[in-house]
Length: 432
Ligand code: ADP
Image 1 (cartoon, rainbow, N blue to C red):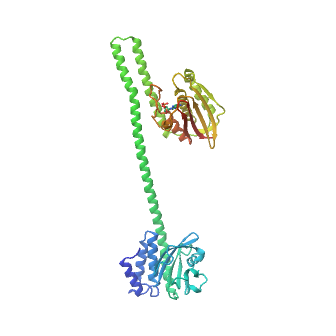
Image 2: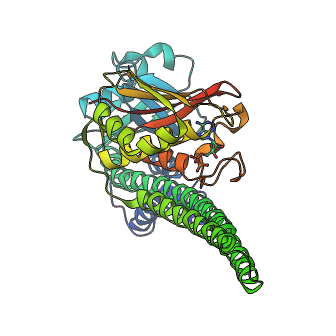
């Protein structure tokens, strides 16, 4: 609100006609008018602008109240009524039912000496008040954003100079209003930017934490086969030095090679998983039937050795995907379905599909050991394994790959499972 002592000086000077000569018919001095402009120009929000302008109107015109009204769609908002009493300050009226609305819609000023005798005035609103006369002008005449007005308690015939003063003030207010709106927009943009920077920073911190965890896991999982290689190598050396049976030494070496293979598999899985984050995945129509055929062909040895029974319910249909990555996804799901069965039992796998518009869902169902409900979500994260490698070998990357791959292909993955009964893994991709 503009209530500085400087303003009081301006007001006094306005009221006394000023010492520097009248600018507009003895109404206001040059100094006073420049002070008003300076104060209006320094407003940074609509609330202070309306306060300053309302007072300037009232004091500048020696009226009993100064009014600042803004258009809000089909309504007018009496943002400020300064002076004798607030009247309808803060209230809203339909444009068609008040004099400021008339001024805005007609883009013309109005001077009314007697509010009781003017058809444009909704007199029922004015009757209980002290208002007898008024002067009101639009803020901007091309497309008014509001109106400025003065009320008098006595009958008052507004002079040409008063009209001129109010029009000038309205012009200045129009510019200031544009500035204030820009400032307010800028402030809210800045606040929005601050909020987004904070969110991004938090997300970045999370990602860094995830990276850190990931590095810990990688180091841990790589060191396990490394330790085995070192230990077994040491034993093999000692056995050879002690003149052990060459067949026993060869068995040690084979174990060493198996540990090296595990390490290699882990590195390969990790590389393809991390490449997936940045790799381009050009999408096109891919036949699920052909992809499953390829996967089954390549898994031939695994299927024969495990005596797995794999049933495919065709046709599986087509999806939009990147074929090499989709193939890897299905390989992971199939090898898990064959691997995670109770010792000695024969794996049974069923592959089928169904429409889930706008996607297509492919199921890989097994009758294996199943997954407890509390673990069904976390197994899709890297390195989450529910069993020690001695029981079920693996790297813990397979399902993380599945989840990341279908996510990047615009789909999703999940599982339904009951421990001891089996699991149904699904992936969904856009239907072709
Ligand atoms: P990996 O198979 O290399 O251990 P995955 O990421 O493919 O790693 O799977 C993570 C874990 O989820 C597995 O270690 C296993 O505990 C569980 N899991 C995955 N598929 C199945 C399944 N078909 N049946 C039971 N458990 C499964």
